[in-house]
Image 1 (cartoon, rainbow, N blue to C red):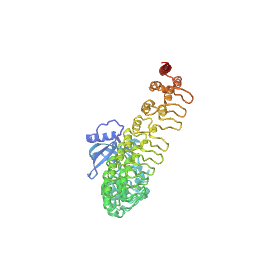
Image 2: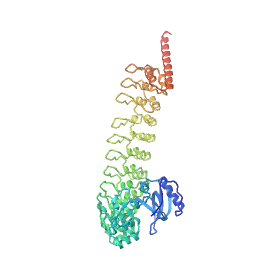
Image 3: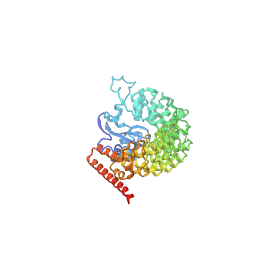
Length: 569
């Protein structure tokens, strides 16, 4: 094999290969460059066409054949596709999450079957005696599948056939004496792999030649589990004939074949298993219901899980049961930002105020994720606006990243603007650097008289913040200047003058009451202005402060003269 060409997300626009229709290549190229999911029509080696959703990561040519490598949402795993078998390609508007497939290729500019898993052929020469005995196979697996699923100690041709859907290769390997029940590490058999990834023809062939359909690997997976994991309803239907008694058998983690089919997002396989007697109420060790699994593992597109969830609701699966973390299906839908699933669950009476074991509610989770649409929908369906997390006392309105619109919505639904967390911080304190939030809180009557342990008011803290002037303009009209003194008798105006906040000084120095006030050490506002003058390094600012001080002193003198003359008149 010789290197021909690899195109990645950071590659420049390549020429359109003559062997690939221009419209197909452009759709795949756009999906690759922008991380958009591409819908393709793909034909297998028997000419059967299936519809796939793929996130492209690599387009490459190898040994005179063009391939697409990416994540297949039908198989729920990384796959490669021959480009000459793609008859249609449409780049959707849905974004996908790259799985890092490109990095595997870029590491050596080789497909993974050239530098991935080394498998020695037990029927050929020992490694090193012949260059065919030390070949390497593709290692393309779902994110959550253990890598040991592919370490199969069978013949090289047999295992390669399982990966590449090469039925002729399987027959050739069997004719050469391959053991169809050879176990690899962790007890995984060739039929496990074929059931998950190779389609009905390879599975039937292995069974015909004696593959054990009752084999169980070391993690308790049956062949039916493996078929359900692959999501191929035809494979599941075929395996149910010899494995019908295993339809509700669980692996070591309590997962049934039905659970695996749900994770594969194969509604056809799910219906096949349910028709054969699969129990929709059985839950694995983590206590996830099938509705939770459908939402949790099929969230690349928001509406992917909806048909599955609707089906299980029709089957009577309860929507309000909790998993091992105390989370409901609604919580999982919120956690994944799946608005259609949230809407569906709420229509079927999902309870929005159920919290997990940490005391976090779906509403708080939505606010933390900055998902305003879901948060507002939960409020409309009665989610309590003030339920706080137990350990931190964090309530939705105390989340630092909350938007003004959602803050307004929370308050309109009865949220307490003065709620405090476990550290005693209220919303005004937490959002002190966000004027747009302060305006909303003040409009709903938030208490401005709160103080810190040293007696500082919100105005004191505003002056000491990074953006004091804008915050001052919001808070000052709502607070009493005369009573805003801390434990040292220092007013916010004194701090503002001391910091040399020029935009605030004219108004502050012009107020007679402010000029008269002194702290408990006897320092006046003009003394603080002098401190600002002595500490300032910029000449222009110093001159401005001097000018303001002179004007303030002159005004104070005129007032004193006017006061003295008044009794004489």
